[in-house]
View 1 (tube, rainbow, N blue to C red):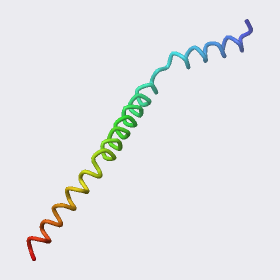
View 2: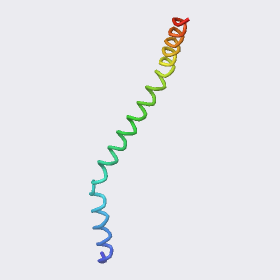
View 3: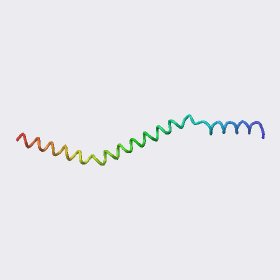
View 4: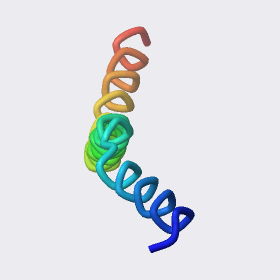
Length: 65
């Protein structure tokens, strides 16, 4: 092999063995999963909370009159 090919090969080996960025990618994936779960929970409970607040508001309005 020529010296330039050896340098390229060595650089590629170092690049493939370097895992310093893997942790930040993992943190990003975990964060995305948490955000998706939060949005899903809000979608599922949103109408229920709105109904409870409407009921409470109506009850308070009727109690005052």
